[in-house]
Length: 416
Ligand code: UTP
Image (cartoon, rainbow, N blue to C red; front, side):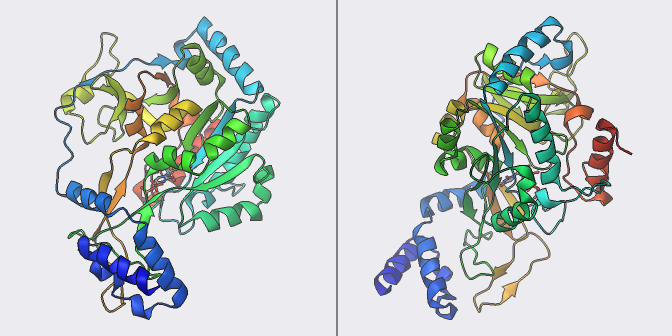
């Protein structure tokens, strides 16, 4: 241990992070070992470069943004059936799996457990996980298959998530047969001086690395290998917080197969040009999403000759990938975006500090930053009221909250 301690001290000195051992003597032997192992596994070069990014504005001004083509599901006419038949065949052949990203912290919602365990207030009091499970089972049964379900958790919520599933008999799914859990990657959090924080447990404070971590996590946790073993070719990846998410869509699949693209995404048309959503575009000729904070008013309001917004296709985290595309996207790192958040930590004396305003940087990759790694993808516009009922905020915010999601869900399923 002493050798290891000396080794760790040398690394920390090199990177100016010696404070991480301030509370070392207060830890028990097990925790001491854990802390040293944890520090040895940190990529301090990456940490340093992340810190440098906090000092720079995210620069995209030089990017060339152009509109991207899309298909409207309800304007497809004869092609609708054509694509649907192709997709149906592939689903019946067991080629589709679903991935639910459930590793987020859900800070805006303010629910104390994992977001998927949240009850949006339906008469059935079903959790988001159960609503998703119901839809997936129902869709699978239409094609005589059980769609394998992969759930991405975080280190923070993995135990609670799995216990919740077990308590609910996995909603009829079978763990390690057609239900798989995997934990997403993490990155250290740091203060404004670039010093890493020590969390309540005495270890370096880590936070989930964003939904863009999905590709690398699927590969590293051998989930893509498992999928291949099950004969899967296509993977729908969606969030846990859209209670109308349609994970099984033969039309979307048929389009991907027929057009030989490796990624097919769903969009809903922007509610109005000022809506705070990211929209699909081409960035320097490659598929991408432009964030609402990045788009100019002029671009947001620009229309084509039919009066449709040129940048009107909102990204709703409903995307279908071939396994090859996932592997390609997971092979090289995505850029990290900085968020300034409130984070509890232990000070020099080992006292817990609970900040009332943001104090720490958190780093997240965004799933859509990987879209540029493929040459082409298909975008399918679907109806908002049929497929998009997000649960992001608490009810007092009034939008994208349990109340709005519940209303949309009840309307879609004709519930009281
Ligand atoms: P959001 O970006 O809306 O974040 O996630 P969130 O964690 O749910 O909520 P806030 O921002 O803290 O309030 C969209 C989807 O991506 C998943 C979330 O669980 C949600 O399904 N996600 C997000 C992850 O799985 N991991 C992450 O690191 C971030």
